Length: 283
Length: 160
Image 1 (cartoon, chains in turn purple, red):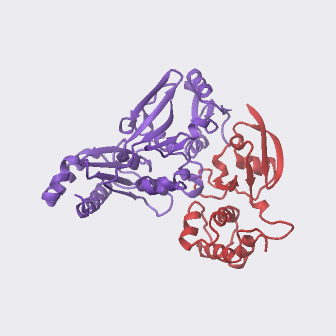
Image 2 (image 1 turned 180 degrees about the vertical axis):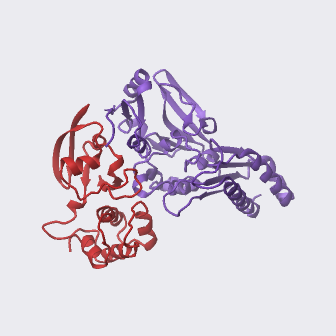
Image 3 (image 1 turned 45 degrees about the vertical axis):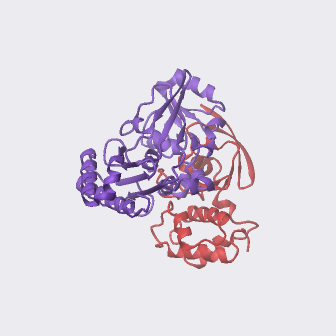
């Protein structure tokens, strides 16, 4: 049984933001609830739960000119959208590994970000796709690049009275190669021990790499400077990239894997990505 | 705090007064005495509390009753109709997909939702759809077989 709290479910954003402004110390935002309710079962105390799912503008999913995903959009809404499935395969790969089918009916894309888990399944794909977090409060709005949104495990730069209304993803580059791998203990629903997503935009010479569960926050590394070198001297530049990545990761040992195991998996996934990029005809 | 809750469960309308902190699972089991839906892990890991909300399978332990205001809920009690087991229930019996039975209501609701969206699922489709439902007795093969058999018998429709 859960401890007592008040449930508030406004049907417009202004009302929600006003409530949050006045009660930010005592309020948690309820979207899918797939993590929040588990916390409440474990004894987390909260006075107010502010359910944002009934607010129409937070239910928006718009795939014109990039992609806009409102805070109330569940993960399965991405997987059931034909345009998203064909244009953003990377996002689909991340989404498919998140929980189970019933969990994905409930869990939201934005919730996966706001939990700020270093292992959040959707975060590496969103980082390399170029995502901006659209924040609202009763005092205004601001846009935060996703890579600057996280402060540490469970901690974001959101301020008191502020919520994430949605995220914006850039139009997908046409001339690109991408990949996503997740290492977990079992094949079924499990958090990542390591996750890695990359995206190469050959025309713009962009090579972005995102890593989950190997540092206090998900990491985004820009490796575009190595792209021409990969073509000319693959082995040397592969070594340089591996060194650059090794310097940035700070994995810990926990129940999902030892530090050394995580380092090895990052290396293996990176090799896989680099070989795939080298094989790309447009390099 | 509490509030009025209107919902439809297995085709019947209910108007309830529900405290804010009660989950859908608790309301189904304790207020409506629909104890077919099981309470297992209370973490969304085991799937024994799976019900359909507006046709979609969800973990009722992770949903507040007040969140589903105005929704239509289907539970295992809605499977059999006119004293007749559904095709899915029948094939679960025939293939030995039930041993202790604790996971069965959740399995059948997840399978019901799968057949609703895919009337001839592959083994992979079935495994994916049931990835959130744990069974510690059967080893799953009987369950997969039951769902395949139900699909062949037109299990998308309830009756025989």
